Length: 353
Image (cartoon, rainbow, N blue to C red; front, side, top):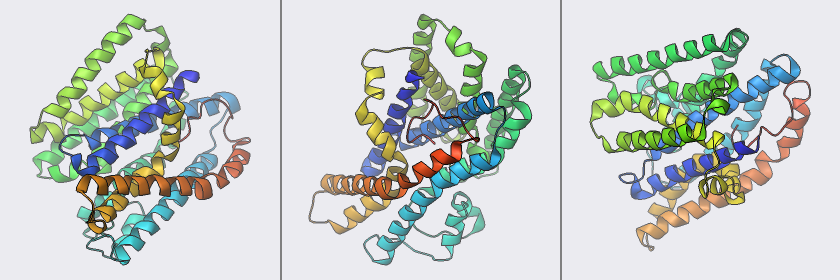
């Protein structure tokens, strides 16, 4: 299980990609790729934990699953959201605020605000969190229904849904909805599903049976595919096939990192620094944009790069405080909750639930 420590490094790298992208460098740094890494990691870890829980306890507790998700997700989200609202209300964060949109945000529907016709105007990236929560509302039930079947059937079902997501993107693009594809759950759920598929492949033993040389070759090929998806700027490609190719490439890269020790890369991803950033990554993701926008509009006496750095520093400080006073206190309660609900073991890279 020690090899799973690299997940901390990937999560840290993903959140830094998003933050740097929003620091005025979105034309160079692919923040969307960081979000896709989050999605694949989330699917892989949640599915692996469900397999472990079933193996150890003989059953999956839906109550325990949803209670753990709620405790992990909701308190930091509410604190971060409240901070962003206060910044807007105080005039520090310029935004077209609409109070009626708060309900849309708090009910995890902001990624469909364009269809609902109401948006809060709070610049906090809840859309990706919405996709995850929509996915996990139903996934445990599907897992319970198919996890006991032949593992190959589980894999075939995943492939069907991956293909279905691609077809939906084709359909939405042809309907003129290309602008919404990036944010909608029904067009992006497959990014999480790629992580689920990787967990199923690991369960089947495919990962452990693969030779090191094959893995290195797959890593190089996947990296080349990933770079190609970033370089191709055609709109049709970017809103349809790009997500599928990135999902495959990220999954392959993750598979190699789990299977193979790579000098420099593996120690870096498994380092204490990476773990520290990963611990803060959820709140960093939520709060960095409001903080950066506030610093950019308020600290006009500073050069623009320093304003973004000031916003990033404020984001880290906020994340540290939220972790200390909001995230850590419930951990003792969560450990008690695990008794009879989920096994306690090494499969818990912090910041990846």
